[in-house]
Each structure stands twice: as structure tokens, then as C-alpha cells.
Image 1 (cartoon, rainbow, N blue to C red):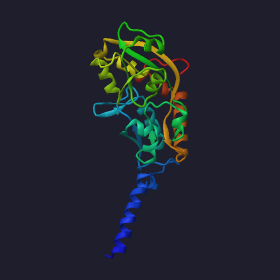
Image 2 (tube, rainbow, N blue to C red; image 1 turned 90 degrees about the vertical axis):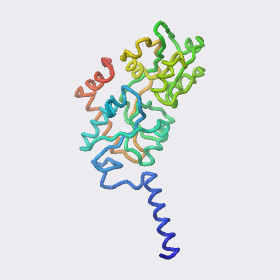
Image 3 (cartoon, rainbow, N blue to C red; image 1 turned 180 degrees about the vertical axis):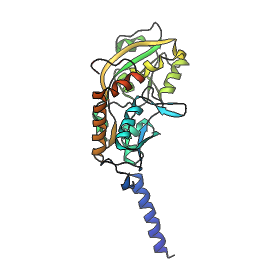
Image 4 (cartoon, rainbow, N blue to C red; image 1 turned 45 degrees about the vertical axis):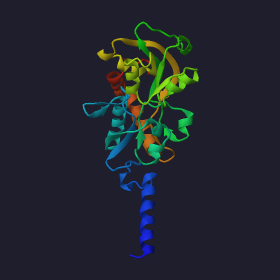
Length: 268
């Protein structure tokens, strides 16, 4: 083989790898009902584990509120759902979607303008608030009260809970994920943790956390959204919105909500 031919082959291989890495090398036959999928026969979901009750591993299987909703989308498309555990930073910046790693991001992710620059959000599917979890008997009515108390506070890295706390002047200790955050509280590295209320509510259902309680709740006006690749998958986004909307109308959403979270608010 000539040096020129060899060089061409190498360049061709590198080009193919580059296209695949940027999401351009997907299988065209994977498109279903106009929705572009990374792999034929499945909708690939990026999430960040663990984040119960939205997604966590139980018995070797990833389950949760978000999982059940995307399963409805998969059913609508006639495919199955495959879930990939992904760093949250690569989810919220859109890099996981842009790299063709997944079709949809479902990670209990708050809709924010700075994130919407890089990903396309679905319509809101969940209203969220932030809460403080600490030893029973503790109570802080406001984030300012918590700051003034001087207790060591833990937050999960890259979350809106962390952004909210630090934006209010709370010098929190950052943990890589929710499991590490909870362990930080149990081992007394921190005295209180701030995270989404449904996650804390789920923790408190376990007898292992009987020593703790909700010590404060802050309405930050947050709403969760699913996300797809920016300006590249309008039909998938449309399908997600239609499926969630239909689930709200026919009662399926309420069933899933009460399965994973608890009684659904009347205005939910």
C-alpha cells in the first residue's frame, strides 16, 4: 500500500471517528416517527445516578419517576429505553447529547436559561423546591437563618440547590452526587444538606435516616424538564411533550407521581 493511500485511509478513519463523536455518525435507520435516535430499536437516556425518586438503581435495574415517564415515550415510539449513567455536568451543558451518547437527558434537571443555550428543554414536567435535611429538632425558616446558624452545610455539585445556597452566601461543602451528600451528613462531615425536596422526602422514608427530618423548605420556583440535542431533534421533543401531556390528562402521570413521590398536589 502506498504512503498516500495509507494516509488517506488514516484520515478517513479519523473523519469517521470525529463524525461519530459529534453525533454525526448515527444510523439513519434509527429514526422513528421523525424522532432521531442514536441506536435503532431504543431511546437512549442520559441520567446521573443516584437521584431517587427520579432515578436510582434497585436490584440491578434503574427505576424512578423520570424512568417511568420516558418509558411512556419509548412505548409511543415502539422502542425500549436504555439508560446511561452520565456526569451531570455533561448533561446540563449538552455535551453528552451533542456527542451522540444519548437521545434524551432525564435527570431531575431544572429548566434554566443558561442551560437552554445548549439544550432544548421539553415543557415542564415537575414543580420542585429546595429543602434542608438535618437532625430532628433543627429548623430554619429561611436560607438566611441557615446561614446565620453557622452550621456546616453540604450540597450536590452542579445542582441548582448548590447554586441557590451559594448565591445566598452559604459557603457549602460540595459533594459529587446525592449518595455522597447523604453520607456526608451521616458521618457528620456536614450538619445539614440542601437538595431538591422530593429527593430528601424519599430519603426520609428509610429507617436508616430516622434521626433526620426536613428542617426547612425554600420555594425557588424551579421546574424540571427533559432535554434533547439543541436544534437537532424537534420531532423527539414534540413526542415527549405530547406523551407527558397525555399522561397528565388520562391519569397516568398521577399514578406515576404517587408511586414514586406521594400524594399529588391538586394543582399538580
